Image (cartoon, rainbow, N blue to C red; front, top):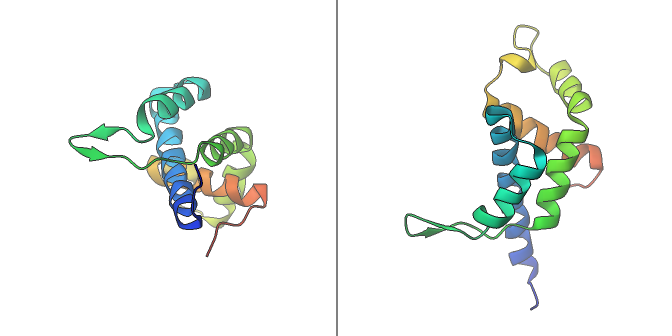
Length: 116
């Protein structure tokens, strides 16, 4: 099966969203990376909820972001913390935004620039 460039772009975008959700879930419920990765790959990618089909994410992008965010969390958090206002350290910001910063940071640290 051939995937078009537009379809691959959508799959990578979905993988980024899933990575943010997975990082939030890991922090909120203290689940391991392996448990969360398996749940997303088995039950979230392309799943149907309330009659709506979830997007099919790019598994490689999802795994790379998730693993990169977990492995580089200290470095990513430190870079993010330096960019925040002194009165708002990373531990004080909303956990969803924190997960977003970590996923984005993993992609930036990996040196792979997302498409424009």
